[in-house]
Length: 477
Image 1 (cartoon, rainbow, N blue to C red):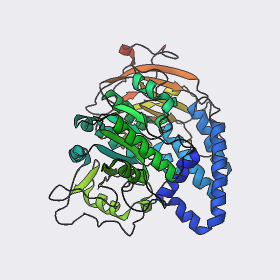
Image 2: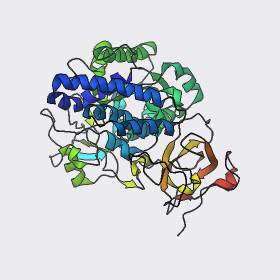
Image 3: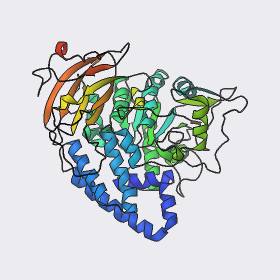
Image 4: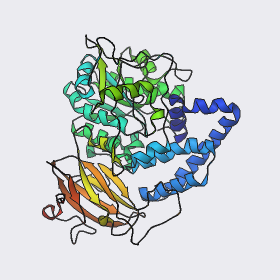
């Protein structure tokens, strides 16, 4: 896969974030950013020296707190936000690194209130739109897992339309064969697969019968060379299998089919040139909510304020033709505004596919902070969890060197989001990765309040207990 340098710089440039900074003090700022990237790489290598993910994150956040230089914060904030998503801390990930979505000169007029245009659920419309294509491109913002949620849900209807290969950015080729055989991702499967929604995306594809493939460029390919090699790898998949119908997950503007792209060509442009195939390009990173609404695209705010959608939508005209905010994309997805309960976003329900299970901090047995992870019961301990979260009386982003090990503190409560009628193995571990306990639960679809796990059953520490004694208890009135 490309180095973190490549991923970070590409993300910043594609989003327009870095261009604003470069414009302030061009040459000096560029030098500072290169220095910050080298510094960030060194910190991440040091963090990887810790065995447990939570311990790795502690290295990252204390490094962030220790250096307030703007260039370092601009670069390392993205590194930090990746690890926050890995831990299921999506709110802080957004606060650590967000991109303001400003209107651009070539934006198409908003469809809101225009004759003939009307909103439809994206999950219903997009599979129908994809019928006429052999290749579908879907993009994401790498530290905003919201932009992966619709892709997870689209995989099944796209499979029913004959799509059978799922190409995923930054998967490690070394694990591809084992991944397809194993049926679930592990930490060694890729970089972003450490994030639970990304892992759920790959896992869902495998369960549906997709062949999951890597298409990332070699580490020494950067800039336009990276775009070109990615496109070449995708085209080779189709040439080698005439029956392949391809769904591609990529970041930001890599799926842009026309327009300016860092002074060169995007992966999608290279792919069209190489293959002669016109892909369906679905944009998911611009019309999204931000905690700070001043960072929203103004068209997004107007649509949300007028319609208050409860699921992702797209606009179509009277003939069924989709609307796109920007040239180079076939259709733009508008995500609903965010809602947080006990610090976690409700979009983790994956638009009706999952339900909340409340976990009381008593399961941590006064080991703070503690990591709560839910893995499918039929997957190994090495599986990337379906969901995970950190419980701590002092929030992790309270940048401080405070360590809480015991005391009379308010016990935190959090929500895991899991699929009903599935069995999961919950594991509780401390900052050093030591197992505090584990238990099996069967998740049911609640008719009222969500299920609650208020404590680990007696004798469950260190090993899973029987299903009959580990079902999450009903919420108390």
